[in-house]
Image 1 (cartoon, rainbow over the protein chains, first blue to last red):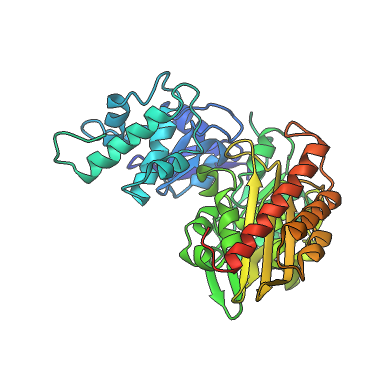
Image 2: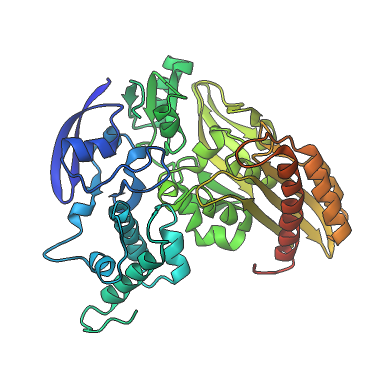
Length: 164
Length: 291
């Protein structure tokens, strides 16, 4: 039993695949499903570039076997924009939350779970929430501002001006 | 980095999982949160022929009090411990520990049971459970048994678990009124292992420390208690002299290795300082402090 048929829900659609038991979820997402927004940064469970949501919880997809996602639900960065930029994506745009952008998909997926759990986080809670995601460009300040922007936007969807 | 090939099993009952372990013995590894095992497999530091994924087993994720114990299911995620109001309110040592393990992404998968059975002296729960005097419930082909935490860790990555046994529950004695606990960890950055960390659980009788247990992280080949430090602080009021004596006792008893986190001398001295601070914090909490 070193090969398995798996069925899972990815970004709202049911997908199936034949996987070797040792295949990591991130490789299944990138290579089998061609969803390359999920990045591989460190290969050592350190950087969080490969963050996806597994049944709504942010996890490192390089540290889970694809076969473990059988019958589970996965959300990747490709699911976030829905008829327009998500407030988090808009926040990263408006607040310059990225420079090279490599960490951004993972940052956004971690922030998505953070805001789902805690819609009005303090700056410290935001920093804590993204502490599993490494960024080598921004120094994090702009990322924190981007997430604050999104939290405001989600809490006050109708306001034109968003306080920062 | 791709792990070596293995056979994957995903049993749906504890009995089935134990039977698979009984059948395959040392060739098989249990896959729980996988946050230590999968990286080790990617580096080929571990190459098990068979993985038994226990994530599908029912009724192993819970945190509840029963009688005079806090019961934690073996598959309980670190993030569940971190977010538990019960733990935050009544088990501050455990709350301290859960929030400094790895990072939030890892804690969403990582399990308390896995942290213990991996028996890595760099892991954080061993010291905390040593300080609590916890009991480890295991299930094997011959049924269930309890292992006292003092007998659980027997070497580097080695526990008293038999080859066919699975950790099912951790039982922590509920602290009485006048008790306090704390876990203090010095790490280079979020997600790193401790340079040194100290777990303290103590009981006050008025102003005097009447009992204390102290566990140390990542300063010995096997997770250890600092018994001499415990003796130094018991019977004292936690004066500066008593704290210093306990810190020195812990520094003398530990057995760190030099590595990229520091020299032996540095780690010993850090252990002295962290022991003092952790005891002081535990005493403060026992007296009703909220920090």
